[in-house]
Length: 234
Image 1 (cartoon, rainbow, N blue to C red):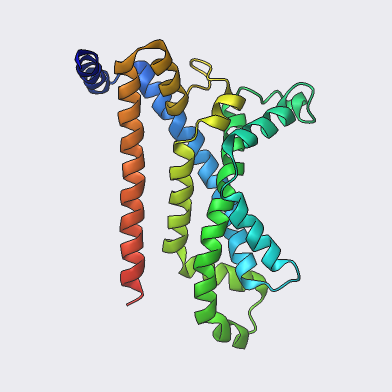
Image 2 (cartoon, helix red, strand yellow):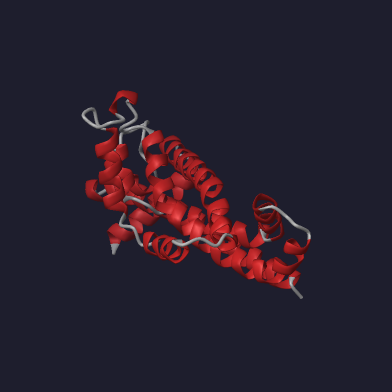
């Protein structure tokens, strides 16, 4: 009980004093996750809308694949990215392994199917409402997708936030491709694992509190966006 209390007090002072290492790890976590979310959204949102609007032979298979990839094991993603970026891999010449870029690549692979699948569900509902109107206007496929993405921007923001929330708590793939290198690739989740193993519960708890605060902020944003989306439809 004493150890826990001391850890809580230590965590409080680390956060209040804006400990340098704590701030550095938090900023790197946000930089990596925000970058991955932006890239994954740029890929996943149009992809989800395209699958919702277009009709093609393998459409059901693509939808099933997107849904299946939502549960893609992060450790497997980390292993695949590691093999691709290692010196003996096809992309090893770029020297990206154990860098924030490698971590971003892994997170993009993990959250793109999540964003695309949620976007597909949202755009499919809008497409049912806009179908006759857009066809009567002879809108091209690109115009249809652009219109649906714009009108469903609040619901699609929910998809992006869901991807961010999934990425910010990721540890398996990140520690494999990033290496948890101090002042280089150490983020909140990998730092928590490290500090817990070292027995520095104060620092581990401080990192954990920050991670929980970020997760709660994302959940609150999702709640606000969802309420705004529902109210806008009435």
